[in-house]
Image 1 (cartoon, rainbow, N blue to C red):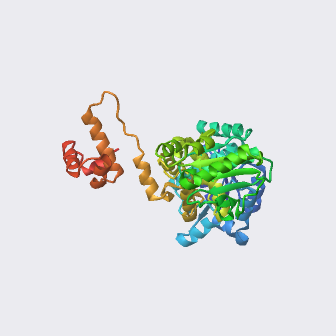
Image 2 (image 1 turned 45 degrees about the vertical axis):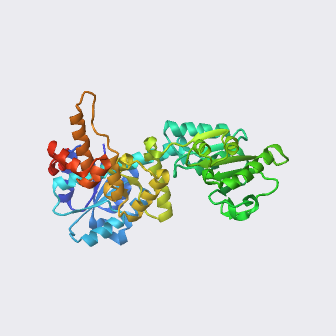
Image 3 (image 1 turned 90 degrees about the horizontal axis):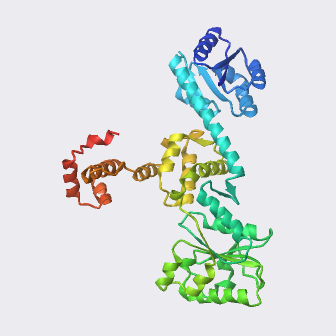
Length: 441
């Protein structure tokens, strides 16, 4: 049962609000002033404070500041007589969840209290999510609850115990470098360098040139007695003439007098087997690099990770931007869950950052989701085709749902279905798919 604290000097207002809320099953406490309200907050587990505007504004909103500093998860609602939207916006910016203008109707009061409850539930879910991420589902800075990511975490610990080369394969934005750094972290004591080799366009002799080798934020030459990790990023883009130099270098370190306390990790966005088959990649280099393979699944194949990634990213973005966005509502989350994320984790973080920067509220809603993401989520929809359905029935459903996803743009629909525009018009007429079908569910 939610506990509501009413702070008002008006006995009629106290009685009216208390009666409405008690009839709905709320536990209600009524006090006259802010001092009594603070005492009550210390003794009782109050969830919602409903206070008169005059009480909140006393001494430069001192009561409101005290509530926010000492009882951070309490939702504060204001009751007042102003209808000035700029004034109300100013109050909301100070941390008031909502403003109820007089005359106060039961419907408006209860709907506001219900929304405040939903906000509290969202905060509780978010708090539980943070706790779970901080224990089981976070590994070396990588978040993943899915079975596929848990398996990768296990592989990282396994391969960290041996100094065999590792090939990390995955689409752009899946976090290949994060996995490489996790392997490095569990392979060596602190202080061993992590050198990143920027493979695209590498010139001959690059291994002795500082501008191509990066450790953290500094470009350095590779020392003669190398210890640590050498990470070949996007190895599929390594120029073919340079691949022979890399083979010689790796063979020297493996069988020559080089340090044994080092490891090789490479990443690729394309299948190196195909690159070898087409003659663009040396087979001996491929066999050396692929002693152990780790394939990172795209985000669309592990959507159960999305809520946890969102919570982590929102926390990071809030710290970086100073914005107080703390959660995302269920409707917005559903839209993000339905989108296929071709840019994977990096795209998700960038989208969330834009949403946080542009939002005016503490909780992100579906209105904050960019239009292209909402539109893309529609394209991922599964249509209800079942065994036993006729081809005509299935075709009608597919055409209608594709029209809906394209906002009845027939040119785009025909292109997506792989049919001519005239054929589409004929099908629309055949199946009686009038444009008003767009609004039907």
